[in-house]
Amino acid sequence: MDTPRPANAEEMLGRAGIDPTPLRLAVARVLAREERALPVGDILALVRDARQANKVTLYRILDLFVAKGLVRRHSSGDRAWRYCLAPVFAGRPHCHAYCVRCGRMDCLPTADGLVDVAALGPGLAMDVVAVEVRIDGVCAACRRQSSPGGRLLTPGRETHK
Image (tube, rainbow, N blue to C red; front, side):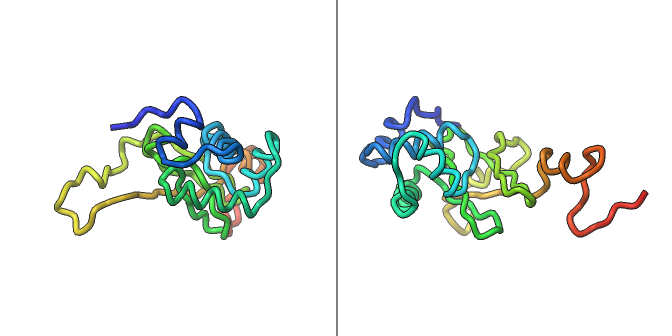
């Protein structure tokens, strides 16, 4: 069952047991507002729109958020972690779509076709604490920029007329 998204950043931090400092609140607001998995550089730029911040402090905040279950850290294959709200705070479990060209990682709506591993019950050899699904491809913006007529050009393959 989906948990409703908290009304604000302060409520999210409180539910996660995190003291609401001004910078932590700014980071939580960015992650809640963007609704996509962001790399550290993007988070830092968006936080700096509201207040001063440095990369070291941001990494410490993100590590704390991950440790407390507020945020999930996702691998994209390009050595840069992406961060988004954990399902209990995002209001729904979700998977991600990653563009192999521009690096954007979007949070996708809950897909009914995905197996709810946690619902499989006690027959599993482990207690499931998380499931991560990432779909890699080329986003519509990159596809439009790189191919005539917006056709998908598969990386590593030539198109024939």
